[in-house]
Length: 152
Image (cartoon, rainbow, N blue to C red; front, side):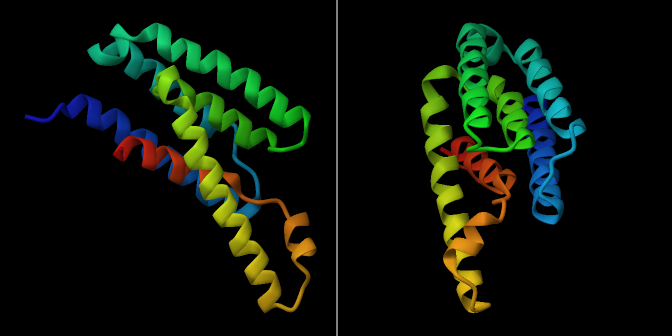
């Protein structure tokens, strides 16, 4: 029988990530309540689920590394504050050895999203530079990367 509690935690996290992606697409912002909820669900999962509880050190390490990377990305204006908060909130779900995979999938999804924005600008007869000046809704890429890691 599948672990109903574990799947419930994953389902709630997935729905929260979908909400973040949707609001990011619509307004280029991610409300603070969403990363907070993702973080609370992740912490609860780390406490309740035996597999996550057994590897708590790896999950805490992932949080620390993501916090440092997120701070640097925000300071360097690579990512917005909502995107960084969402990544940090999601990090306790991912054990440190899998963090590189998550970031790789998010980066690939973000690159694909940027290409879509450039193509849309070209269709509208704007320059690709104009498209890249827009803020890319990275909440969508974070959702895609998290789904890819969960599946694999």
